Amino acid sequence: MSASPAAATLPAPARTYAEFRALVGTLAAANRTSGPDQSPALVRFTEQNQAHLDHAHALPLLPELVARLRHLAAPQRWLVLAEAWCGDTAHELPLLARLAESSAGQVELHVLLRSEHPDLMAAHQTDGKNSIPKLIVQDAATGKELATWGPRPAAAHALAHRLHADPELGIAAIVRQMNEWYTADRGQSVQRELLALLS
Image 1 (cartoon, rainbow, N blue to C red):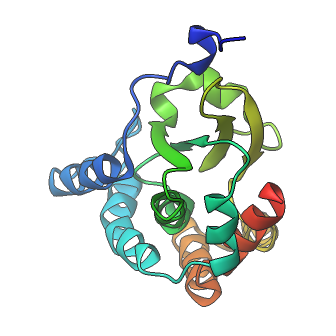
Image 2 (cartoon, one colour):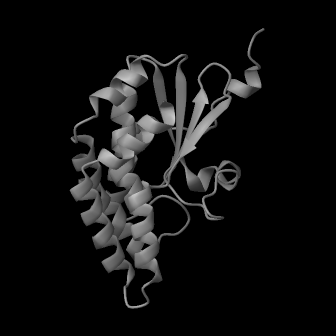
């Protein structure tokens, strides 16, 4: 039985990781960010995220996760809801992209801006919020949803909750501590959770 063409249709607009990375650079150079909110803070985070994107892209991949991806039962399509200003996206998306690149053609990754896909985001909220990044794993042939992950590893999620609950911490302090967590973790938590998800 053939797959329904509608089920396998890729949401538009969708970007490759390279296109998303180029978009972040273009926006930062123009003192802008993605999405409707062009506040100075989000514009500043977009510029800062360029370094995080580059750093995360160079982190080592878990060999067992790469092996798992190369031996999937069927090819997968990974949709990632993201935005240029999002710090969690900057630390996680490059790893997802490299894993897809290392999958020997078993995984194709597409980046979708949250602001351009409100219905898809509304259907994949976390704790009732439009939290990103959000990974949606689909069967590549049919578009059937297989799993979701995000917006961050469990340990980082718990830390974010604690930080946001502290009335004395401003957004800059929260972002700094989250960046420190990601730097220390070196992408290990994201990859371990993905390995468990796909096993």
